[in-house]
Image 1 (spheres, rainbow, N blue to C red):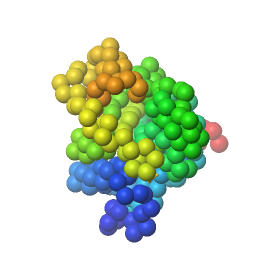
Image 2: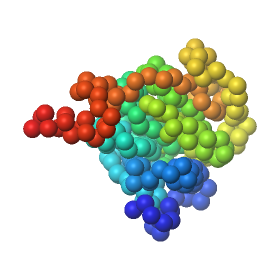
Image 3: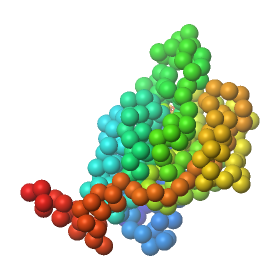
Image 4: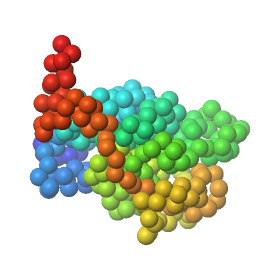
Length: 283
Ligand code: SF4
Ligand code: MG
């Protein structure tokens, strides 16, 4: 599965101009980087939910698990606990991860499970042709809201800050160089990493002009300062007409969920030995 070309020959059905292409090339660059570092791509697992984003599992030639709608994170958590040596990367959608799967996202952050979650946040259900999601703008007109939504969007970064996430970032698919760095840093982070990616849906919610005129790089923001991170995250609450910061908002070190479990069962250098011992104890 992981030898040769990293892009599969599967017919790509994403619409022209879709931000998923940017994320695909970001992940391809990440995998090439890991290979150059001498890492085996057999140690990388991609987990997807359901939605346009999920076709990433079809288009990237990497070990992958296509899960149910909203269930990316529990599947990824199980994979990480079964083999903590794996690099587990989740691609999830906003309708997928911020609606049906929101409780899983909150608890993954709370536990600090060592997985990376990339949310393809196009602020619409694209695969089902344009219904509103928890991050759709107020007044969004789509298939389920022809007169416009009457709900304010929520701010996923604030939710992650209050849930205890140890790496929180925001990227944008039309800033591919920065996105590559953010995803690389997220994967390198020890513990739970969350990247909210403002993704262009070219067909049902094309916010390119709006984002292009509002985004800016956070620059020398102190990522260890929780209060500063909260302030920066609240600057744009997905509804106001303010600047939209891109970059790492917050990062801290903390024991991971898998480490706490392994420690409880007696730390041994080889994580797989510890897992086998736990399983032996149960049988
Ligand atoms: Fe991309 Fe939107 Fe088309 Fe889905 S519907 S492939 S998100 S442009
Ligand atoms: Mg979506």
